[in-house]
Image (cartoon, rainbow, N blue to C red):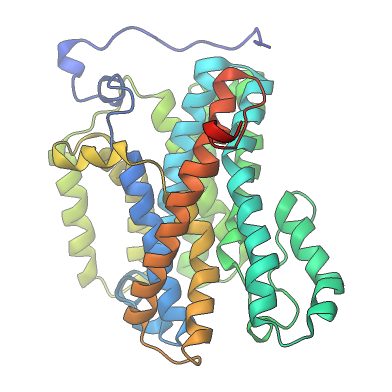
Length: 374
């Protein structure tokens, strides 16, 4: 179902002088570093949780210098890359049905498998309740329904009697935010506002202004500034896609931004360092996604394991910590958990996620069973 009335942007091929533009880089198709950056970002979430779960949260280096953890910064990177790629997805098809279907196939199959693992395997193994009480407890049903939809009341964090009531899969809280970003982008695209020159800049500037004000005022725990930071990152990524013909990815700019962030360490205000890092994140993420070449591009042939690492990481980390008696170093927790989560992520990608994503192009139901079992 293609929609009319969408304002088209300039589709001309970049001239040789535009060889450093995002458009020129994106013409190489999937020859980029998106998968690599996302799996690194997912591993940074595990790194931060390893410190937090073991009671060493304030010892993390980025937190001490920029007032944001590596895990939270990684989420910002996810939102930037997601905004860019989701805007690209709409631009290729301009179909509401195809857009919604593609987003659902990316989020839900892997999520459902993870939730079922938490409820059916992890819960019975670690709950302090009897198996019957655990299985019939209302919170078990809430965990399944809320986390399986993400559309009712956000996520439900805990399973009854598991890990002393601590969240079983804390990273899931960002997924409802992601779905809301999809919806807003879809509304902007469907109405044609996505391609109007002033709309996205006004959105990102307003969101960044609110976030910056909250950072300066020390209101870091408020939900609104955090939401505004996500809006800034996601729609900055979308804006970089829309303006891909004119935005240049130059190494001199990239290293100048890094130098500025390094020099900001001499500033007495950690809030201003956070503001600078947030402002720089969209450009840094898109530059790294397209410009570095050579052996790093080989990772693309493996698959996109980032989502699996992200959603399986925290349950694995909590399980590893429980099996260790509740006491271990952050490095040990990260190392063990990363290995296990990566195995689960690889299995999830090859056996489930990649097969589900094939339904995007076919438009038909696709068997998730191996070919020999169909």
